[in-house]
Image (cartoon, rainbow, N blue to C red):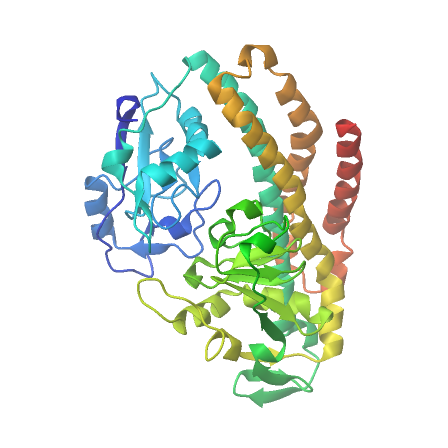
Length: 461
C-alpha cells in the first residue's frame, strides 16, 4: 500500500467544540455510500478548521476515504469537494500515486469482498469498537495491472456503480417528497387548517386527535431464532443498514448470522438501536433475521405503517432515542422507559388510513428498489474479483457491456433523476397533496417505472 500511495493517514484525533456556523468536520457517521451526508455533520470554528488543515486532516479531490472505525470498510468512496471540510480519525485518507495506481482502481480493489474480509480480519483491532490499524494497513500488499488495463476495469465497474447511484438519488428524491407530505399533514397541519384546534401539552392539535406514546401504535417484537434454524433467511446486520435512508441496498447470507438473532417480517420497521445517532431507520423488503442490536417494530394496524415509519425517521425521534439511550462507550437505545414512551400525536384512524393510501405506493417503490440495486451489486461483486485477478480479459470486453448498461439502464434513469430535481421546488411548495400525487411529475415517475420494467425484462431475455 505505502509504495503505491503518496499518503496513508487518518483525520484528527482531537475533536474541537461544535459551532452553529462554521466549517464541516465529518466523522464516519457522516459517510454515505458515495459521498458525505451533511444533514447531521458538525461544524467547527474557522480557527480550529485552519489548525486541522495545517495538520493534514483535510481531504483533497480524488483522495480515497475509508470508514476506519466502528464498521471498517463499510463505506469507501472517492472524495470530490463540495464544501471545505476536515475529518475526524474515524475516517482514513488514502492518496494514490496516479503514476502507479489510479484512485478508482484502488477503491474497487479494496471493495473486493475477499480483500475486504482479509483486511477486516488481519488489520483491525478492538472488540467493542473495531478499527483499522493504519501502521499495519500501510504494509497491505496489492496486485495491480498497468494503467491502461486499470482504466478498462474501472470503465466496466463504474458504469454499474453509476446505475446504483442514480437509483439511490431517485430514492432520496422520493423520500424528500414523503417528508414534505408528512410535514404538511402532521407538523404544520396544513391539510387540516380549516379544522378547530385543541390545546395540549404537545401544542395545538386538530379536534378529535389525541396524545399518547409510541408504544400505543407500535409493538416491539423479539422473536429469537438460532443460527442453525434460519433456513436460508437473509441476514441484515446493523452495519449494512444505511444511514438516513428508508430503503436497504443489501442483505447477507444467513451463513454469517451467528448469535443474538431475531426475526423480522416484510414491512416491519427496523431501527438500529446500537449507537442510534447513526440514524438507521428502514422498512424491510422481505422476511429475514437481524441481531438484537436492532429494534423490530410492527404497527398494531396495517394502516398505521406509513405514519409510523415517517415518524420514526424524524430527526427529533432519533434525538429522543439518543437522549434516553443507556451506556457511554457503546450507547444503546432502549424501548421501555425510552423510545417506546416518547410522546406523540395520534391522529384518528380515518386520517391514518387516508395518509397510508396516499403515500404507501411511494414507500413501496423505495422498499422494492432493493431488488434491482441488489442484482446490480451482485453483478459488480461477481465481476470485481474476476477483473482484478485477470480471470476476465478486459481487452476482450472493451465497451460492449458499458454500452448495454448505459443504453438500457443509465440513460432513462438519468432522465428521471433530472426531472425530479427540476421539480424539487414544486414538490416542496405544493400545498395540496392530492393534487401533488396526481401531478405530472408523479405521473411521469409511475409511467417511467412501468416502461423501465418492461424494457429491462426484454433486455434480460
